[in-house]
Image 1 (tube, rainbow, N blue to C red):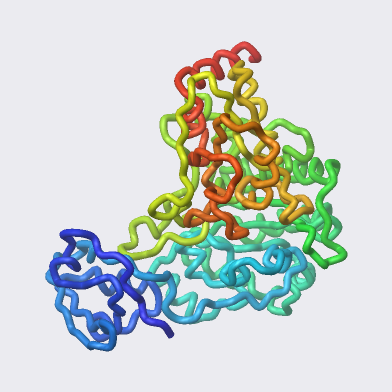
Image 2: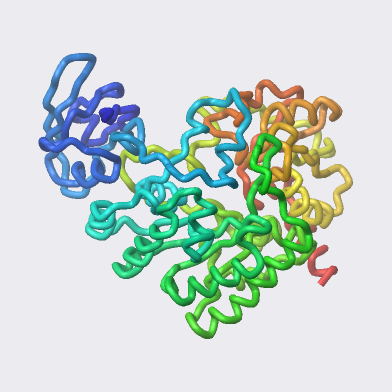
Length: 469
């Protein structure tokens, strides 16, 4: 078990006034040893907290004068201080198994930890969930959680997870719902395994066994060129259309029965099938936006100026947990100082290239065309690094951007969405400074892109959209 290490102290905070310094290791709080940032937050919530610290081998005890509920003002080094609960499933479709060699070690960690589900929106299969976990979730109201279902048929789920506990672990989902824990479900559809009649059976099983689910997303598997699973393959256009049809059919069942549509198909299905995205109101608040459900519609609304704030990633519990580090999807996209950030201000007529993955290009293309600005174009970055059917913008890497930008002219503005960066680096370890053309890094939402393209972008886009209507 590691100790939480102080990485930052807010100026003028109770911690700063008490003399806590970055680098201090927290041995205990009020005599208790926290095992994760959730427990840490509860311990430092009280008034007048006593901390035992290790400062470079020197043991200190510091009493922090603070009001009950007042933030301590400390950011700690990690979310979990004990061992991460790793995943003991061996799913054929697991993307961790499909990563190329040589990437940073943390990317190969498979977790199945309900605490990371609560803090960061990770999905858990519940195959390692226990009675003690249930007691803690219920007692501390660790809600919402995200649960991977994949199939409600015990044999199919066991086969998909390659884990005999797959047949029984959904009993924990039932227990969570019985205790009013908010749960979002996920089904990763693998062609020929849990699509077709199995998908219908699963959606019927959800209605029968887990109708209290808050939402349920149906997403396609990603297959990189590094996959060695013979049965795993991308969906065909017809298979994608069949998944959409099944989801829509079950929405028609769920809506009158449960009062909401419950299940939604990922945007990728509509792109693959060549079908229009559902209208925004059919997404019922975009509860699973982070899982690729309704991203295209929210981006469109942002780009056209129909909303005044990004829909984007939901802030989650970590945003208000004093000290919880931002990790995973919610990690800072740029390091401080912003690695490689170069903001060019050429003439107003300088050509603009918007860099994006193949799936992003399918969404951005019509929106950029609607501007009527010939100097603005979408540049599709093929993902040769991962290969296969990987086309999401968030998995763009430096190697592929280097190859793409080397073919582009100098002197243009190149806009790079920040979703492909974590702490200022791409997944392959390169940074924007390594690219052959300077880039402007913009937030991955329609409002940010509209602002980067300059005044009048949304006005022209709305006018064009109205003309098409």
